[in-house]
Image 1 (spheres, rainbow, N blue to C red):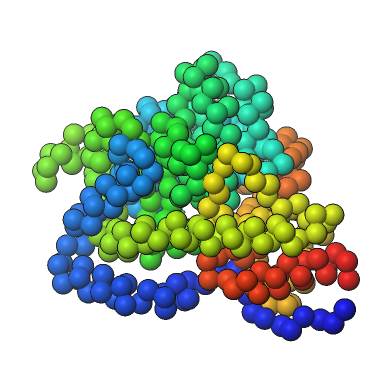
Image 2: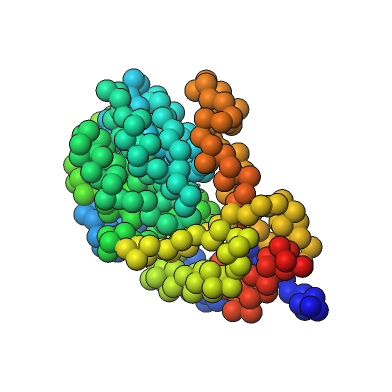
Length: 372
Ligand SMILES: Cc1ncc(COP(=O)(O)O)c(C=O)c1O
């Protein structure tokens, strides 16, 4: 078989995104600069209202990162020293870091073949100290929220959804961030709904908690000179809110394109060699990432790189084996599924600016690597 004609397929293409919306982005920038309202401009509350309506929740609180959204959710739920929070070791480190920052203990449980939390293992990990469960909708694929809700109801646990990767995803028609008590989103530049820097959103149906977190994100100030409780500075800049307002209107279109790319990959990739993310009928996946599991992952990544294809690994070191997690006392072998996946996962480009031929090229290379 002849070598396919070489193409360059970047893992992400923020330059293409900018070119596609240059006029709108420049107009927004000019408008906000002209207003001089860089903090607490009207776009912030407008974004909160539109985000809440989009997710189907009462409240959305704009903050300056997904990490802060997680920390504020934990604070709102009253979680701190002596409490345990069940979560998974194969997320971005921020899920665990947030739990540690409020003084609570992360209790890891292993994951399923699809990389999401194993609910049987979560049930077995509940103790008298467990206060919350933090399912991570990794890659944009929602966890089994029926089982998580049932577990939370049985043990009176707070559900904090790490929805950093799952804006627009749904499980049985309910959007991510709207099923648990709190939803925590990231708008990091690499996310489906991305800002031009750091940004995040916290969602909840608890209006009292939302009112409190709106104070906490702004130093706890109830007015210019009165602090009700100690807070932080986690305000979302007006500029970021304005960019996000513009992009929120396109987020379903972005997800649809990513879904089409993922569908094509799944049709093309050879299942004898590649485990591609499964799709359940009850889910709508926004495909923040498209992660396959393969043998000889590092060699495949190098091969794709030499053929112009950008890839990534989310994440090569499970959190329980990070130096920062030393005090938790874990060792290799504690979470065998997550550890095995860490050695086998590879994130292929799935972004909305890929052409169909890009996907065909990447899938063809992957198949050729395993069957030269
Ligand atoms: C699963 C997960 N949780 C939390 C975060 C933290 O979000 P941020 O980078 O906006 O602080 C991220 C972002 O990468 C993430 O992917």
